[in-house]
Image (cartoon, one colour):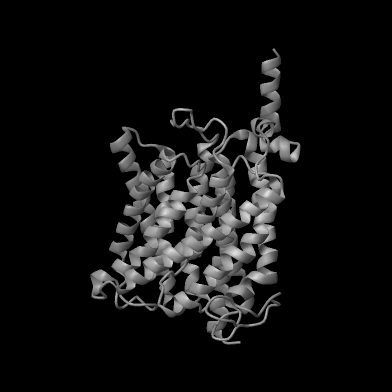
Length: 420
């Protein structure tokens, strides 16, 4: 076994572990951004659905993405058993684990559109369907040698594959489930159903920020020339710029430095740089993240205005920022760094790469949304609805779906005070 093979394998498994730890970040993000009565449910279903996603990726997802097939889908390598993969200078098992982690993150993003109102059974069934029918085709098109990769589509670590796919699936879910009780008034105005723990959300963003270094830098799949360090710098700069931009725009527009919006800006910057982190210079990473933070602010307001209830802002920070991040390489990819596709508009490449990126955004978003909508609509009919009853929603999903609260001591204390 040569040294490079071993070092590459060690580096990529470190990245994979960091990505899996991001699941913990999403638990804290979604829990902190929602109400206390649903905290235990959100935490538990996230772990459970990651388990389902892992099994389905092993059984079918990996083969559908990376198996030998055609430009639309892979048709081999199901029930992956740990063998090495041609063309990779690292352990095939390590590569498999890293790709499994990405698939799990995309599913977690999709479930943002279910928050506080979906039945547990809806999560379980859609976890299977998303992991086999929605995510793998898009990943194959871009990362598995499919038709978009043949056109030179640039998406280094998944602004489209992971984030936009998850966000458009979330959009289909939130449309079918409809807004949470009390979110919108009869006149169309929105109520702030504030999350119960901003400390959780801040900690979640820190965990995601650190995990994202594995997400993006680990996607180099190699330690050669330590290029992963450059990717990590771009990732960190974009997150920082997104945080500052979101704080600035809320201060200007609202008069206060809104904490949740600032945190959303950090995630938007991370999502946006995910496609371009290996293809752009550091100044461009700052600009990409900064624009993402501003876009996130306006996108959140837009979805609320059209009465789309998105409790954790998945549509904006993963969807809108994912679109911008994907398109950004069409502007900023350099001649020296664009190992896939062509340079961007500002580096002499003309409009070609921007056109390829736009084509990827449109086709992938349309596929993920339409297929998810159809699957969820069928589930809604077959399962007698996707949503819990009004009474169950008022009680909270902790009790109605699991029979216990995430914060039992606090609930008991409140009950005693009410009785007095």
